[in-house]
Image 1: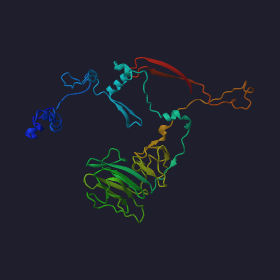
Image 2: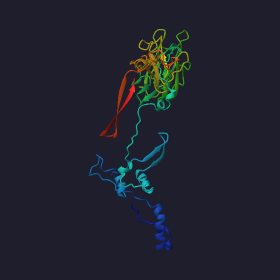
Image 3: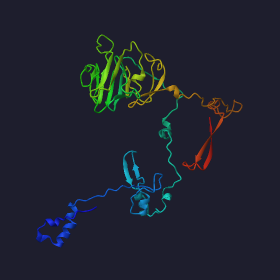
Image 4: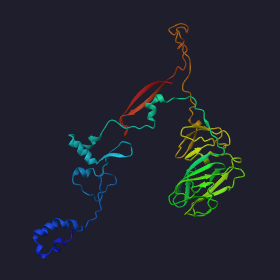
Length: 390
């Protein structure tokens, strides 16, 4: 940093420009008002034994060898909820704190070495801790029968792909797709497209003209909110076209078709109105929730009819998983009987509680578990064998 040669003492009357006043002003006022000139440095900081290090690179020097060796080391952080940091400390501060508490911080590799490891298996720990609250069922619960006739409600997420397209949650990786709706049902389009007002219209065109009437569409033209389309039933009161259009009010390329179909003529397609939606309510008012077991018996496309499905992803993107893919077809064991009484007639069991036991396992299986002393290198292993019955 360099300073200009001009001093504030020169602004004083000549009689006050004494050496003492000059030194005082130079050490106080001049330090506050003098412009500084900063030198721009171009250099690296960080460890010098990484693969990216080159001897020709320029590195900034630290004030001590320790700081030089551990530049940009990760901080020690603590989070109580997994997201918000409650405590953070620089690496050097953590090491120095160990020394301040009476420990030795000379060998850093010794400070952090350990013989235990963190392991997070892909299981639900609650099922292990509170196992008494869970029950294995040989057969699934009876499915809920969905009514997919006129009167259903689907909520579909809509976002923008830059300035060129709308993307719908029920149409994976498709820009400006055709959207199928059914007469008598309601469709809620959850719009999150700042700068791209979403209109449902009778024909293409930017701006706010040619909108479908408020009788059928509410909140038309929103950029952040719910646009609701209520498709009238198939009767004499129906005054809506068989093809509608969605269009961005600002960009001509962000547009697509909304095709209106009649459930008296076509079957309901869950891939159009259920899968990928944020929310779905059937014609009887039943709203889907995660993990429920559903079945559609009539009025549905052939690939879905009479099949049982688990529901997942409600609120984000609903998925239907065929229950058949979760069924365990192998037998758990061999059921047989064992007589406990002597000769099968007399003995200590006079109440016939255990004289004809069933579900007795006759085969012995062996499970081999390999426990590694070093998860990183797997250089030394210990084999332990457990016996269990099936």
